Length: 89
Image 1: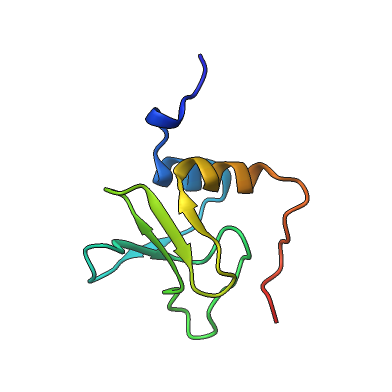
Image 2 (image 1 turned 180 degrees about the vertical axis):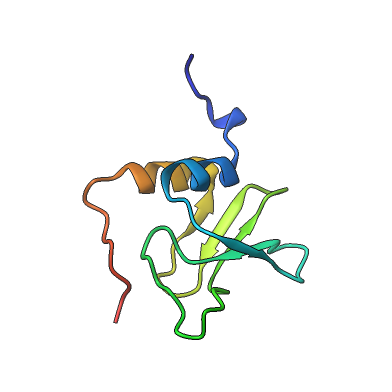
């Protein structure tokens, strides 16, 4: 079975490729908040609000490393063996 862009789910990609806990946000456009699976930034306060996911729009954005895009772009980034794995300074 091949995966097409149309049947990708952004939360499934995160759970499968970079599992991590998340919290529900108050903003309806940024429904899920979690530690960034791309730069792995983890807040010192324990509240990871810098990486947001909109499940209905299938979009993500990290306010630390600047990564943003759709489910397909997230999957491609997480599959890249050369991606940075430490947060920016």
